Amino acid sequence: MKRTAALAGIPLLLLASGCAPGAAAQAIRPADRTAANALGEPGSTGGECKEVGKEGKPLVVDWKPEARGDLEVAMQGGVAVVKYDCSTLKLLENCHVDGTYGFKGIVLKQQVVRLNDADEVKINLPLSGAALAANLEGAAGRGSSLDLATALVGNRVSTRSTVTRADLSGMCDGATHFVRGANIGAFVLEQGSKAEVKSAIQIFKIGAGGKSESSKLARQQDGDLESCQASTSEGDKPPSRCGALVRLSLVAITDAPAGATAKAASPAGGVKDDDDGCRAGLHLVDGKCAKASATTKHVCKAGDLEDCKAQCALDEGWSCSRFGGTLIASDGPGAATAFKKSCDLGHAGGCSNYGLLLSKGTGVAKSDSDAATYFAKACSGGDPTGCFNLGSMNYEGRGVAKDLAKASGLYKQACDAGSAAGCVNLGASYDEGLGVPKDAAKAVSLYKRACEGDKAEGCTNLGVAYSTGAGAAEDQAAATRYYTRGCNLGSAKSCGYLGKRTRDGKGADKDANKAKELLKRGCDLGDSSACDALKAL
Image (cartoon, rainbow, N blue to C red):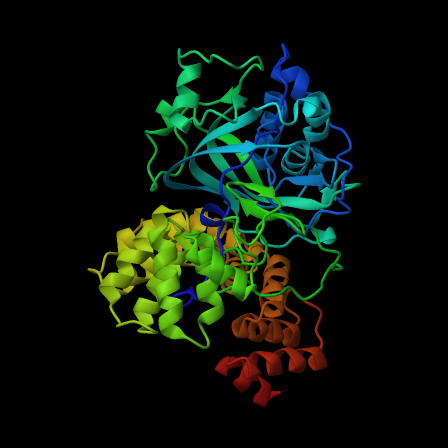
């Protein structure tokens, strides 16, 4: 079976490293209200919001426990679909998309985020922020806040980076976005004071028997910090009492018609760097979407060279990675410096990018062993490309001792973190029995995840499996379907196989002209067997 390229290209943003844990609520008047009362009902956000972006990273800490439970169930049965706009974040329970989520552990990350006014509440809590702001707006300037402490241990991520209307099934009226992934861990939401700064440990400790002197707003809590501290970055599931959904990563559903040619994913199958989840005019500031000035430390927007340079100078790690990305073509040494600083500041994407430059000797002395070290840091931080590249180095024995079992484990981490390329290579390992027991059926399930993630090799390998009955019941129509998808994604082999099937009428209508067209495409893409078949025709 075909594997993907040995090392993947530069990813500038990934879910775990790019999306800081969330935000809570505004300055509030101390009042004898419960969080359930204050947070219970959604409403209109008003303000300047006209529409949300193509991508969004809203918090779900204000959802009622049963609502978050419904979302967890939906994510176990396929890719979850939602309606998301300025005033609504609603799960469409009866709308479905084929797909699965993997879990990738990360190094434990703790953060406290505070929202300071009604606008920040409405922006960052799309379900019930308006209702909360309406209840609390009179307290603006009185020195109170609502604080969110988070302890993140990993991410649930689907390999799907695109969903079209044709992919939807069920009752999908109003569907706007699908859930690409979610930050997982524990959180506490409580009333705080602007004059008092608490750490995440202090806020969690109150719920474990400590006492809050100022809070009159009942705490919202899911999970506990002690349980989260047992997590590891290699874990394939969160610890007990540390599996709460904290923040979602949403991607807009496209209107591409059924059968439209799919666009190939990035080499790593990772999340592309084009959105921090904050709508126009807002930046990610201390884990929340808010207005920011040039002197306010914030995540720069992708492509904004000057702001990324300025924010990197202020030690904002994600901005350093984005700054490095803008320098790749023109200034290798400058890019390497920016990526290394990003990594040193704790941004996993920066570690992955710096590792790639080390592996190539671009702007820095070439060192495969050092590259492996930085890929390991990236992988621990949740970056799928770091896991994938370290897996490939272990597979090849490049910069590290050759270790097929370790390579397969790293490909699994990459796959579970959303890398379709990682799923392809792990599937090939099961097909070939390299580093893992030989298991053709397991390989097929992994190829399916890769194909769902627009990875051409996954679709091609699926076509072979259904064509030959290796790991799946023989199904020639299914084989043709997967070869078609693989060809649309740019696989020379898929185009060649599809051309031959169309020539012979195997699992497809016999059509000599269409066969020639497909074989030519396969030949042009580099499949020598397609070239030979084309000459014969």
